[in-house]
Length: 203
Image (tube, rainbow, N blue to C red; front, side, top):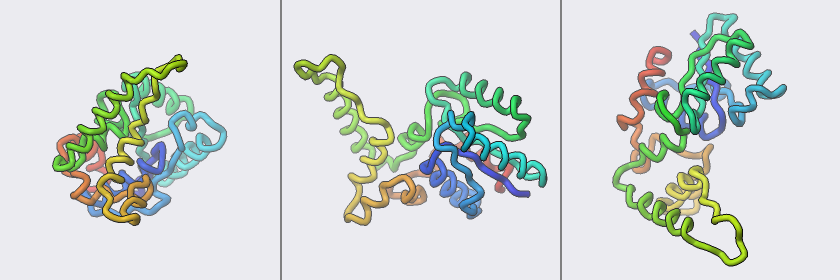
């Protein structure tokens, strides 16, 4: 039975592909995961129609649809919004919201929590960097300095660990190897909710 996965971005695509390969020994085809380029695009004429068409097509052949999106700041609100979109478009799919299908956060929240603990000092430094930025006051500037996005933090983590230029290339979202245990722990307890959710589809 064909399972289609619908995600927000290329980083989600790569992470989910590696996670399923690692835990269930299943190699997904590129077309098995469909990207919306942001959750609000499910309402657009482009990506939204693509999602709807792909879900309906898969359901028509008794396939299963999974949506894995970010909860962002409010898990319950995002779940309600997506469920309403599902009802309005008469779609069939199951939902998992990063980071753990129960609280606020996103893919980057997941990644922050599954780094190899040997590398934890890198994030300690980064946190001090963010604290320092938040205290800086520049004359003539009305607003505080902008704290870099969490995506930048994850990229910086991998770039810091790079030994060569080629390693730095692997810090890009589409090039990352989440099965590299020197950087990531896909056996982390933090991922149990995701593993339990995916298990019926890929075990």
